[in-house]
Length: 221
Image (cartoon, rainbow, N blue to C red; front, side, top):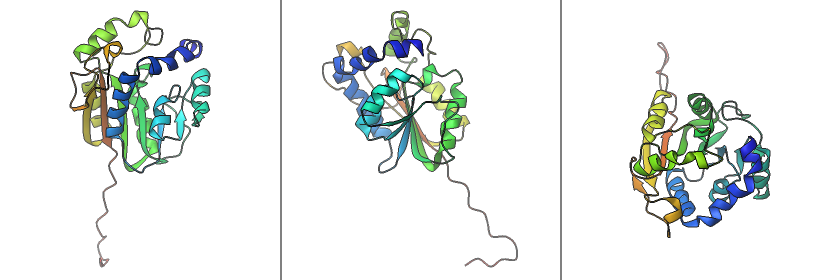
């Protein structure tokens, strides 16, 4: 957490300095979120996405980043993605934006996110897609980025496979940022699929439990 605590203000300024790229990312995430459902953001950083998307509850282990998120009106719990401080099925959706790459055990984090989503709810995972041409270039230059030096390179195909392994259904992907973020002058389009844009969003539904058939000897109504 040292880099995140030390550089929280610089991290937050990125969204002002690259506003068109940020707005592109917001569009892609918003397209994947369910409407009229209360959710949680896991690894909320300084709260830029939670605040813009109306998410009131978040988890963030960096104290400095959590302080900035709280200043934006978000209730932030200090916890890690692999062990969330919420009851089973507490939320209609869970959102992770560019945070899964910092998790030591991504599958465990997604499994824990699944636990706190109610049946029929959505898990939305946004990543800097290491499978895309823009993503490969971005990750090649990560040594000069204080936040991404120790991050794990993730591709949209791998995240999709993890969601499938965990039983999510209705999996969809979309993407944006087809240019380097610093070169984006106006918000870019959101396109279906993945593998071309730097910013990819993968989402899936936690299935509802199957209905039990009426037991023998009982009359169904």
